[in-house]
Image (tube, rainbow, N blue to C red; front, side):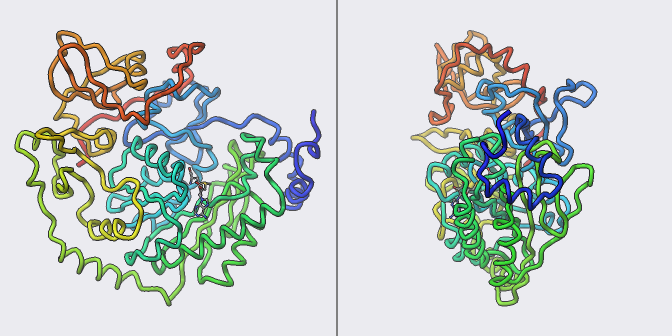
Length: 489
Ligand code: SAM
């Protein structure tokens, strides 16, 4: 067996011994094991098979209702449900955020939530699933290519009440209606990834830790004015060292006014820490590295929440919302039952909560939005084209269109971007939605000879996997059922 000193930098080993004391040998032993595979279901789209029917190899993640471990890692690319946003592949430790949110009365009351460092979307999809009914979510990522991936993942998850922006933290200081909750899942030295990405070990150094800690301090100070008084900033990293955790909090105490919130996690889960700073460590629980703390803003210099809501109300009354008059009659039957949140602009039909329209206008004015309000349909000439984002969202009106259920091979053909053969019985020159295992995937439009494929081109599966049998592969995936039933809106 390779010795610890041959694998890890001495500074890292020393720091972990200092942090963990007698637990350190168990930690290093766990680091030598394989990282667990886990995923989180999308409760708006799927549920796991009932517990008695769930094969034993799929164990639930104790701190997250929707989280499950998989014994083997399937090729998720060959599972159509992965593309349809049925689940998100996520390390179990990161799901601790869901157990934290459930303890916060502020979360249930939140109206505006910001995920500041959001790509590729693990925390944003979790936040979206738990988002209170009255709230909207801004998911931000500063790096353009990563922001595109974030937008794709959130669209597949269901992006009603969500916008994706591509901004620096300080840009949010222009938003006058502050955020009630801001999540800063900060770029860090990545110690908690060492098991899954051994190359991260080579990039680690004490100097790099110091650079990360300074960047984290800058990010938090830059975003602080965008948080309302009494608002919560949830700070997390996938690293353990005190410089990016305790020491950072001490540095922030010098510059900002806040209290650290104590959380209460079930002692059986094995979460390390108390008094506000919590760590997931691989020898204590089945997951990778993750650290979390929550700050409540106590800063009377900031504009009060109440006065902000007043100005929001003033703006709301000034802003007369137009009904979707521009939608031709024949398309009205497409619409969700609740139409107050719809409006038409530049030949596009949008959906966004009425109460958040002034906030949306502010976001559009001050930020670079990668995706704005949910697009329901866009006009092309005399016709309207329903959007994939709508189909994948919770406000899709399933009943207005014909469902085209397909098997695994056909679903993959569709996701490869191929046209599908049309059978005489099903031919109809209208929009139809492809479903796999009850889950909406995307649009097709029938012609006399085939179905035209409307799966977005950038999302197409590009690689072929001739050595893998899709049917066998899908048996390694968690058995899930699509959530059906009436539209939510
Ligand atoms: N929250 C994400 C998730 O759960 O999938 C992971 C976020 S990752 C740990 C940190 C993100 O911060 C990266 O996507 C990175 O591009 C972004 N980032 C890097 N430098 C930044 C900065 N100076 N300000 C804000 N975000 C930054």
